[in-house]
Image (cartoon, rainbow, N blue to C red; front, top):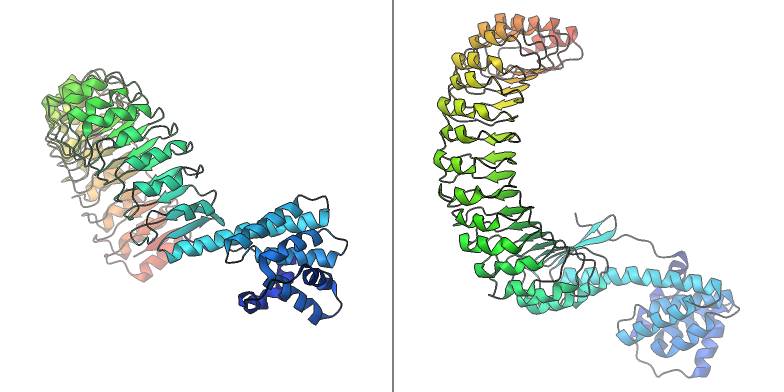
Length: 595
C-alpha cells in the first residue's frame, strides 16, 4: 500500500524556521552580494534582543545564499548558543535551495559542523543533516509522482518504486539514486530501455526487479552484475536479442528468473549456467522446445522448471538426467507425448511432475515407473484411465495423485492398489463407480479422498469399507443413497464427510450415525427428512452440520436439541422457521443456527 512519509522535523528546525519560513520572497529577490562586513554584522545580530533586528539578519543571510555559508559555518561553533541555533537553522534552510551549488555548499558546511568538537553545534548540525535526508527523499518522491511513477512505503521506509506505462522520465533513472535502501523496482510496461539500466548498477540494495513487457532487449542486463543482493528477476514478455543471456552474468544470488511469454533464441539458454544460484526458472507460454531444454544441462543449481503451454514433447529431458537438484517440473498444457515420457523417466530425482491437460495416456505412464522419489503427480484433464499405474510398483514416496477430470475407471482404480504411499488422491469428476476400491486393502496411508462428481454408488461405498484410516471424504454430487455406509464399521477416524447434492436418504443417515469421530457433515441438497435427524443427533462429536435446500422443518430441528457438541447449523432454503431456530438455541446456547 502506498503511504506518505510522515516524519517530524527536529524541534530546533521547527522553531528556527518559524522565523525564516516567511522569507521565500526575500530569497527570490535578486540582490548585490553583501560585503563580509555586512554579513559579519548580521551574524552578530542573530542574538539581538530586538525581534525586528534578528528577523532582518535572518532575511539578509538567507538572501545572501551561498556567499553567507562560510560565515554561518564559522559562527555555528561560537560562544553564543542563540547564534549557533539560528546559524544552523539558516544552513538547513539553504540546504533546501533550488540551485544545486547552494544546496551542496550548505550540506558540506553542516557536515563540517557535525564533525566539530563543539557538542551542542555538532548535535544540531547532525539533526539538520538527518532532516535534509528525509526532505530530499520527500522531494524525490514527489518528482517521481509528477513523472508518472509511484513510491510505496513499508513502516515509513521506502520499499518499492513503480515506473510503469505512465512514466515520463524516459531512460533517466538517476533520480532513483536519491532513494537509498529500496529493494523492489517495477519497470513493467514502461518506456525504459537498456540504456536506462545503467543507472541501476550503484543501487546495491535492489533484490527484486520486474522488467516485464518493457522496451528492454538485453544489453542493459550487463549493468546488473554489481547487484549482489538481487535474487528475483522478471523478464516476462520481453523481445530479447540473441545475446541477451550473455549479458546476464554476475548476480550470484539470483534464484528466480521469469521468462514467461518472452521471445529469445532458445539455443542461448545455456548461458544461464553461469548463474550459480539459479533455482527457479519459468518459461511458461514461450516457444521453447526440447532443443531449448537440452541447453539447460549446465544449470546445475536448478530446482524447479515451469514449461506451461510450450511445444515441449519431453524427449529433451534426457539431457537433464544429471541435474540432481531438479525435482519439480510443470508441463501443464504442453505438447507432451507418451514417447516424450521416456526422457522424463530418466530424471531419477524428480519428486513433483505436473502433466495436466496434456496428451499423455496410460502408455506414457509406464515410462515413469522407475521414478522412486516421486511424491506428487498431476494428470488432471488427461485421457489416462489409470491402468498404466500397474507398472508403478516401486514408488513408496508417492503421496498425491491428481486425476481430476480424467478417464479414470474402476479398472484403473484396481491398478492403483500398488501405490501404497498415497495419502490424498484427487479423483474428482471421473467415471469411477468405486468398486475398484476393493483392491485397496494395503493403502494404509490414505487419509483424504476427493470423489466429487464421480459415479460412486452404494456398491462403491461398500468396496471402500477397508479404507479404515480415512479422515476426510468428499462425495458431493455422487449417485449414492448412503446404504453402503452400513459396511463402514471401522471408520473410527472419519471427521469430515461431504454428501452435498447426493441421493442420501434417512436410511443412509442411520448408517452414518455410527461414525463416532465425525465433526463436519454436509447434507445440503439431499433427500433427508425430519425423521433422519434423530440419527444425526446421536453423533457425539458433531460440530458443523449443513442442511440447506432439504425438506427439514422445525420438527426435525427439534431432534438436534440433544446434540450437545453442535456448534453450527445451516438451514437455508428449508421450511425451518425463526421460532424453530430459537428453540434450538434455547436448548443449545452454544450453537449458531442460521438460515
